Image (cartoon, rainbow, N blue to C red; front, side):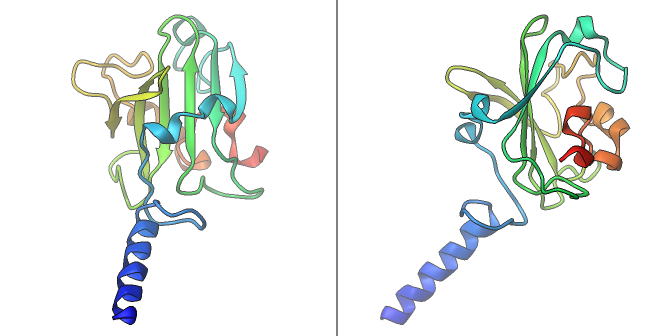
Length: 172
């Protein structure tokens, strides 16, 4: 009976690890929840007042914004690890909070591979929408087509679809 219980516990622990639910090492899939984003204002952050790094969105559309990252990647990393969470809080203009999570598992296979996009509210931090892009009728980043993947694809694999020069893999 004790061996059977131990086997059940081991199987449950393995399932949690596969879903990113267990602490410790990197897993193949990470699922984010509102609680994942709750402490974002305490993470490593970078402030910007200028246009988008790729020049596609002018400063007056974006306005001042702060980008937060839960855990910077290891020095020399060529991609962000699964479980990376990046939040961008826009402080004027659109006054929105967007996030990207390196989910893994092949999610978003026809866009920014392994990344999931979010819009959040603050106080308390709550997920407004999540997925490969915003729901129909909503927009992301001033893009009238509302897509996240279109802009982030332009950043390409050179920085694992992350457009911010402040979050360039080579700077960590």
